[in-house]
Amino acid sequence: MPGPMLDPFDADSDLPARVDVVVIGGGIIGASTALELAERGQSVLLCEKGVIGGEQSSRNWGWVRLAMRDPREIPLMIEAQKIWEGLDARTGRRTGYRRAGILYAATDAKSYDRRERWSRHLAAHGVPGGMVSGAALDALLPGRKVALKGGLHTPLDGMAEPQWAAPAIAAAARDRGATVLTGCAVRSLDLVAGRVAGVVTERGRVACDAVVLAGGAWSRLFAGNAGIALPQLKILNTVMRTTPVEGGPDVTLWANSFALRKRADGGYTVASGVASTYDLVPDSFRLARAFFPALIHEWSSMDLRLTRRWLEEARQARRWGPEDVTPFELDRILDPAPSARVLRSCWAEAQQAFPVLGTAQVAQGWGGMIDVTPDAIPVISGVDRLPGMFIATGFSGHGFGIGPGAGRLMADLVLGATPVVDPVEFRLSRFTDGSRVHIDPGY
Image 1 (cartoon, rainbow, N blue to C red):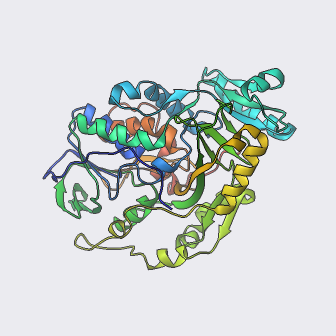
Image 2: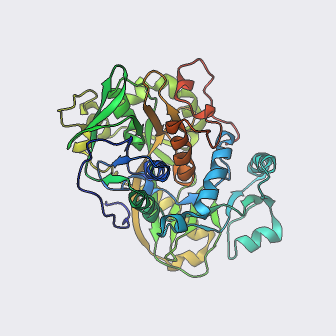
């Protein structure tokens, strides 16, 4: 099943001989990084093996949220929200961003207490929001037929349209002088005296001083070929959109068995609030020790299965040279089939909670591969042993909203500027320096 329809993007055709920075990956993280660097006077080449925003950057829920994030991400998300507010004017294009608030519903006392405990992070950062119930809850969710004890409401949170945002940001980077190539995979790094001196693409070599790997679900494969240990797995998330409907909730809602947000076209994006599908692959066992705490944390919501993906990844090359055809050229766009069971379940739950949705039709469903790390927060970091190499990946389902902030932080790191937030929590070396890698229990 094809993924969402993207805004068209006019890519470049000529490969430059040299740039300051090569960015690998044309999702929202790579595009945001390219825009930040280009605006600071750097010559940039953004290489995307498929199309701009073709994978998870266009397949996510479209939430721009501070609510219920891992506390380690909050400072960066606050910066990202500031960027989103001016992004349409900055890019000269539509992203669909607007503030409508997000409500994390609580069905019982236990979930209510959990939301209330997390809400203390808002006060610590001077961000408005808190628990609502009774009449205030009814005003946010008119016409609801689902029993709720209350919920965490963050009025400054919002949404954007994933199919618009990454192409808009990449086009703005091109406006600022960046070269943006699609259908052009980067095969390998070119190293001289132990540091980055360039890359080899399927169209030829490009000299550069720095490389940013923002390849989403593909990042581990590229890093491994370069001798960089990057613990990252992929999780399938299933999403659907509906035809337009009047009278539904305007606030974006997470309600455990379903999550929904109103789209710019008047329809809704709907997904399960918790269900994710994990296909067992060889990396599941290579990384079993690193991901064991995450498995325990997510066990109740994880659908583990053995499918043909095991064989596909077992056959996938893990080492290659610059003259070889790579896995990135053999699979231009990850387009996994959605889970029919999840689609049926979350849509039925959403219609039961809001009967007005019964007048809408399911227009499309799709799957997307989320890049996850053992502690469910991203890597935004230089590679200590390889000068000139940087990685921005593993956003664990939180990448769309935080993407512009991540791009700004990555640009700071590449240029040696004062970082917009302290990047220590996002360092790659946390997986190897003896630090306790943990999932925040309140998230």
